[in-house]
Length: 90
Image (cartoon, rainbow, N blue to C red; front, side, top):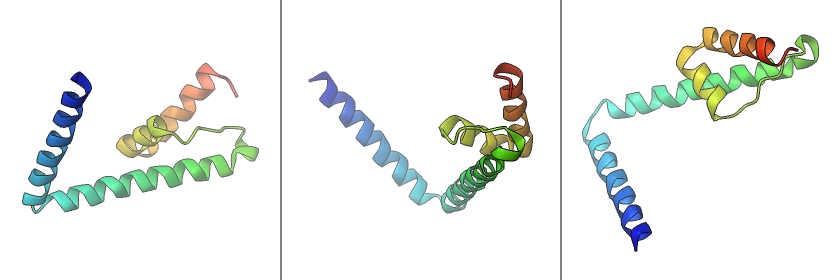
């Protein structure tokens, strides 16, 4: 019974969020920029992993690394690489 209530609240809040997003005319621009940042971050991480045989540095392509690079950009990519060198050691 408790899980049905939680799922109902989740679906209802998702529908209300979708309604608010559709009423705002700038929401689609925001959503497009968000998707563009995620795509560029994924491409950057993929390119870095392509050259891993030369650089001996391989960063995983997961939600945490893509999120970090999409928010911080190239400095975020450099920070992840430095963190991997410092913690794991290449």
